Length: 173
Image (cartoon, rainbow, N blue to C red):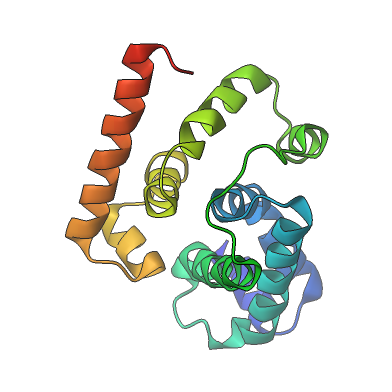
């Protein structure tokens, strides 16, 4: 991947496209935790790609490309979220066909159950949970991406797990 990054930094559009394709699913999942409208998600990802393309030469540590682009995405999602003045993410607008195609998913029922659980969490809990469990970032990495205190991240993880466990025990999902 570092070779692709170096090529992209030198203006190779195909290398940049390959980089974006390698993180596309991750970008979608993360954007989905903050915004519910599919066109807003597309806008956030597109704006992220444009900013990343314009600024890839500024990336000092190629091994941190994924954290760097996710940080850009989180900022774009927050900007769209604030602009729309939405209070919370809604799974009601879930575009299942697009999600199936984008993620090549086979077991949609489990995925929908997971998103139903996420729907009940606060944004901070959702994003930390996604980054930690689905994207497998360390707490230190999440701290860099979200610009949050490590103890705050641990608290969000604890609360999210507790809420999910309670819902599971109640058979809510």
